[in-house]
Image (cartoon, rainbow, N blue to C red; front, top):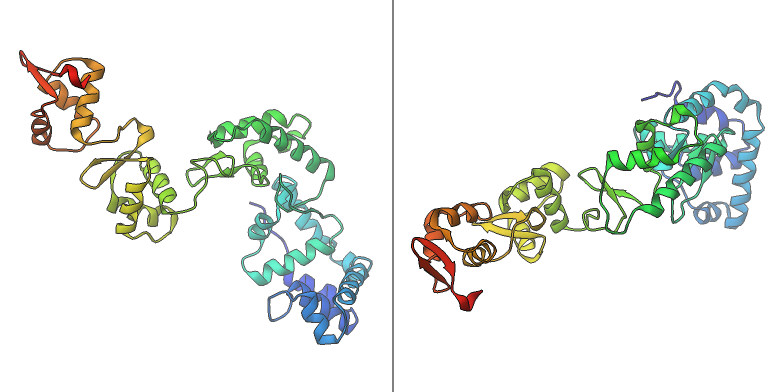
Amino acid sequence: MPKLQFNPGQVSKRLVQNLPDRSRDVVVSRFGLGAKKRSETLDAIGKRYGITRERVRQIENHAIKLIQDSHALAKEAAAFGSLENAIRELGGILPEDKLLDEFAKDEEAKNNLYFLLVVGKPFNVAKANNDFKTRWFVDPDLAKRVEEALKQVHSTVKPSEILPEDKLVEHVLSCLTQVSAKYRNKDVVRQYLELSNCLRRNPLGEWGKPDAPGIRVKNIRDHAYFALKRHGSPMHFREVARAIGKYFGKDAHEATTHNELIKDPRFVLVGRGIYALKEWGYRAGPVVEIIKHILKESGPLSREEIMKRVAKERYVKENTILVNLQNPAFLKIGGRYALKPSHN
């Protein structure tokens, strides 16, 4: 990853130092460049000076224009060039939150970096809309082509479709036909996907529409689903609760997790406290119902064949299966079990 060759806080300090006192205070307060490290509203600053919020806005805009036209800005060409090059290395267009997180380690640094983006002439911003997050870019033509490619992809992903990241990346690449070759690689395209408001990545690295089942993560049930899917095989509810904490850093009480697993049809109870995903082919119901399904599908089977088939769907002792075979629904003929006609 590229690194900035300057300290954003020091550059910001040099840029504002020659502003008139009130203008400097307004800029420092609005961008959170001072000791408070928190931006102030137009109303709060206006009350402090006894002026309207619109007047504060005018002072802020005028101060930014003064900085942009100043010799101080010209002297910081190396810093702004370093930031521009870093953005280009990451694809030329990035979501605002990703950009700030990439180059700033704390809130103070983020505030100063954001200020430099605002006053720096190479940098352009587009506000968030239905398709994209707020994003910064250094090449308007590149940004337009990237957004057009992503819109093409948005239009082809179905509401409930879940896509592996590699497949989605290849799809985006196929739409980036008018973009320089240096930006047509998988690492850059993964950065471009972060711009989208129409697609979201789940905790397993799969992509889909934000409300698609298997993408959204709203509650313990969703976290449990992803924990099981990531594990790849049935788990006891206590293991699921621990996995939620391990994978996602979210506290999940065992009893709460168990209750949520019981309520959600995505999960199937396959043993004492053991759950699997229905999408893996497990059927809901007690052991006797599983035996009925098996015999209905396959016809008469030996005891050994039934036990082998049930063991694929349930984590139970052999004796539990044998006890269920005594159910009146089953008929034993010549060492093979079948469903009685009334149960077919």
